[in-house]
Image (cartoon, rainbow, N blue to C red):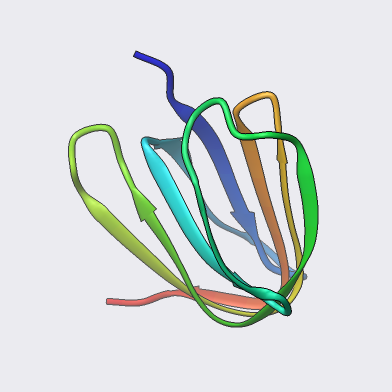
Length: 87
């Protein structure tokens, strides 16, 4: 089964890195969901949640603000000006 390799970083630190089966994020053009095999893309990240579902079904939520969201070859990069895990 294919997975996404996800990296969420803020301006000053790595917030979360790991494998995922799905990532949902808010961009300036609207919300986008990414599954393994998604086309390469680059988008401006809007303020809001980035939701990651791991292959085991665990839900990770990151509150992110401003930055970029990119997908390429099952790798998802979220680079935010500010980002923090939501408890």
